[in-house]
Structures are given as C-alpha cells and as structure tokens.
Length: 165
Image (cartoon, rainbow, N blue to C red; front, side, top):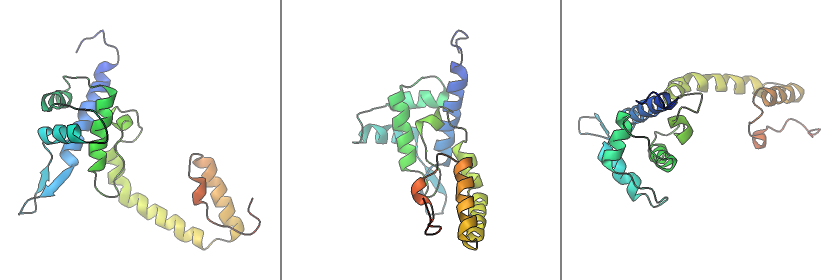
C-alpha cells in the first residue's frame, strides 16, 4: 500500500476482511452429504451484474481483487455487493449494508449473529416481565426505553391505558 494514502489501508483491510467473511459464511445450498456449498467469486460477480434492480456490473477479476485487497471499488459496487449478500443472508440474520462492509457500523454482522440466541432470551425475559406490569409501570418502562434508544420505532409502543398522550 502507498503510505501517502492516509487511512486507506485500514478501510481496505476492513472491506477485504468483511467481504471474505461473507463469502465464508453465506451458504448457497447443501450437497448430498449435507455439506454447505458456498458462492464462488465468479458466481457472485455474475449475479451482481445480472441483477435488474441496478445497473452495476462487476467482473470476477475485479471482485477477486477486492477480496485480495488489491482494488478499491466504487461506492456503487460496494452497495451492489452488500445487496447481493443481504439478499442471500440467512433468515433472521443481521442486514448486510455498505456501511458495515466499510466498517462504518459499530457491530460486525458475525458478532451480531453470534449474539442472537442470548439477545432473544433477554428480549423474551423483558417481554414476560413487562406483560405482568401495571399500566403505569409499563408506561415508565416505555419511557426509559425511549431515553435509552431514542431512534426506536414509536409505532411499536404498546397500549398502556386510556390516559395515553
């Protein structure tokens, strides 16, 4: 890498690592013995190019170079790569976004996937306890959640009584 390109190596390294992680963890199908079959670089390049939802094309060589950290793709290509892997991610797994590929997201998809069973248990525990709360305490809980997570969906607030605002 050229040392004069401040910050570029770290960004490429994250992109390369995360892209290869997606290739490793995304399963296309299973063979007769039940072993996972993964997408190849040429298959992904062809699928991205053939996707009618955008006009981005990428060659297998360019995609290989990105995987090797030898090419710096355009933002459109990064979005198209993210879209392919997001479209082919397992059900209930975290979204794959261009921001995550570029390491602009706080949590990598793999660690979020590993945390899903624990998080689901925590959500169930909170929901079970909330179900036994009085309307006043439930309203307080919703208010605390709004303070902790201000970007949360307001439409998912539970009905907590007739005197709601």
